[in-house]
Length: 410
Ligand code: HEM
Image 1: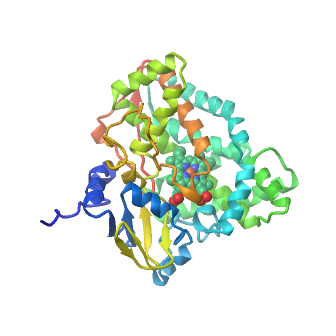
Image 2: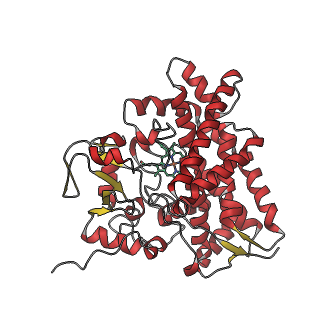
C-alpha cells in the first residue's frame, strides 16, 4: 500500500503546529526532498538517529559556496543581508580549519566564568522588565519581556554601552520581523548593525575592557589571528544566534507551561521549596518539546553520500529538523507529552558536534531565571487568549510566537 500524500509543509497551519507533519515525514519520508517557500530545494532530515549523523558528518559543509553553483549564485540561503553586509565569515558559515580557529578564539572569550559572572545582571534585567508591567495585571510577554531580555543581555556581554542598546533593540526588532517585512528591511538592519560593530571594535581596540569584544581582541592579539571583518562577523553571529533563540525559548517555554497547568503547578511548588533541579530539568524538557530552533542552519553535501538510506548528490542542501528529531518515538517515550521531570533527555535543541551552540550555558541561565521569576512573582499568571488564536512567526529556522498575551493579579 502507498502511504497517504505528504502533508502540506510551511502553510499557516503548519506554522501553528508542525509536529503532525513531522511525524508523517519521520514515518514515510525520513529524508525528504522539498521546495522551501523561498523556492530553494533541500533535503529535510527528521529522524533522531539520522539527524545526529547529519550534524556530525564532515561531508556536510556549512559553507554556502558548496551549494550547487547556480543556486549559490542566487544567494537565497542563510541570514538575509549577511552577504551584502560582508558578514559571511562567521561560525555558522565556515568549516575547519577556519571554524576551529575562530571557535577556539571565541571560547577563550566566552568562558563559563564570564557567563556565571553575568548572573546578577540577568537577574537585574529580568526584575526590571517584570517591574514595568507587574502593576498592570496584563502584558504581552513576547514584546515586553522575552524580546528585550536577551538583547540587553547580549549587548552587555559584548560591551555595547547602555546608551546604544536601544538602537540594537530597534535593529533586532527589524530582524525578528523578517516573517512579515520584506527581506530588504532585514538587510538594512543588518547593515546598520555592521557599521556600528565595526566602529565599536575600533573603539574597544583603543580601550580594552572586560567585555567579550575586548576578550576577542585580546585573544587575537596573543598569537592567533582575527581580522577586523572576522571580529565583526563574530559579534554579529553572537547577537543573531543568541537573540531570537532566547526570545523563543522563553516564549515557547512559557506558552507550554501555561497550557499544561498541572505540570506548571508542580514546578511552581518546587520553586517555592527552593529546589533548583526541577527547574533545570524543566528547561531541558521545554527545549525538547518545543525548542526555539526548529531546523538547524544550512548544510551542503560536498560529495555524494547516503543518509537514512537516501542518496544525496554533491551540492544538495541538507536541513536537519531538530524539532522532528526531538519528538522521535524511537528515542523519546511519549514524545508528544510534555514531562518536565523527564530524566533521560538527550535532546539536540542546541545542535551537536563542532557547531554545538556556544551560548548554551547563557541560554540556560537566562531561561531558568526568566521562567522562575515570572512564576514566582506572578503566581496566578494565565493566558489571556485562546491558544488556537495565537500566531506563530513563519520563518524557516526559528519557531516562536508573535505575541503571548497574559493576565495576572497586579
Ligand atoms: C536560547 C536558546 C538557544 C538555542 C536553542 C540555540 C540553538 C543553537 C543551535 C541548534 C546551534 C547549532 C546550529 C547548527 O548546527 O546548524 C547553535 C549554534 C550557535 N549558537 Fe545557539 N542557541 C541558543 C542560544 C544562544 C545564545 C544565547 C548564544 C550567544 C550569545 C548562541 C550562540 C550560538 C553560536 C555562536 C552558534 C554557532 C556555533 C558554531 O557554529 O560553532 N546561541 N545554537
